[in-house]
Length: 424
RNA sequence: AGAGGAGUGGCAGAGUGGUCGAUCGCGUUGGUCUUGAAAACCAAUGUACCGCGAGGUACCGGGGGUUCGAAUCCCUCCUCCUCUGCCA
Image (tube, rainbow, N blue to C red):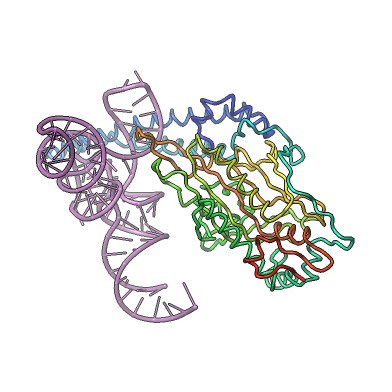
């Protein structure tokens, strides 16, 4: 959530930024926010005055009672009913004004960073760099959904039987490979200074609001209505919410955390030809990295996260490219995002395997995550996160890119983790 | 799951209807003293909102209620502790 103060002081930047996201009439939107906030302040001031008067009267009644002047006290009491009604009315007006302000603030996405380009959608993203050689495969190459059947390592039909579409069952070397990825990613993260976290994978409403999944993406999360808990769509939610309502000391920063969790997404309405096999699932595994930084350091940290994720892809010997998302394709809460896409050689298309973002203060404002500077002044921190990495598409591209007549070769770096060199 | 108890400022812990935003202590910060340090002593020390300021308002687990007035009384939810039961 953006801060009203920020919209007041940086109005021009906000308007330009929202234009990059193709928001209609940002001037009007921001104007509405500011006038709602002005009205809110006005109501607050009026209410405070009425309450101040009531408090005065209550005190004077107290004093009269102690002096035993009961009749005078009763007379003063008579005056309070009107004030009471007034304060009730003002309170209600204030509450609905605050609600209206919050509703509109929830609808405004983050302001893109200056380097982010304008654009309508995925086609307008900037390709920052491309790495590695796309492999030339043998004649009989097949997409991963054929390969997993051929070698019997992942079973979608069994998943349908047990749960439904989008819940694969990993078997034998398939399961073992998942475990290899998990350990590889967490070991690498630890070497890079990320502390390992195992968070809950069910979260409450306050956590969903804290990182911005609620109310915007309510329909994307599985929800247990009885307990009012949500299955996490990403470890970002529980891990970042560890810091909700916290004031950190500068010495504690930066905070760098890594967490492996299963992730659950309804993906309502997004099924189609492009989402066969492992390309899109309801349940998948991911290692997520989360950072909390001083505002001045956050963009340097974003670059470092990008470099780190790329190092994983290099070690896995996967050809990849780095995109900077344009305003129209960027997530609601992000100020700048890099997407990493790996080449999937049989599908002959790029698959997104990581998305690293700087949220600046957009999340920390909702989370009330702040730090104290040397003068004891409190300021919002910057939060960042990224996948490092999402398992299924990595697996898909490993299977497709490394297939040969005699089997699928496992990348060298994974061999010690997997305990085998070939799937054959 | 049942019975009982409890949730107050960084910590500890008073406060059961009226100058209580909250006693005292510890901690922290500043000062005095000292060659320096410790000790001692003095002072300051929650958060948010409104206001140029003086100042005002709200907050004693969350929400609601009673009352002229609530940390204090009532309802409800949450969390923790003890005992009993159940269970990976």
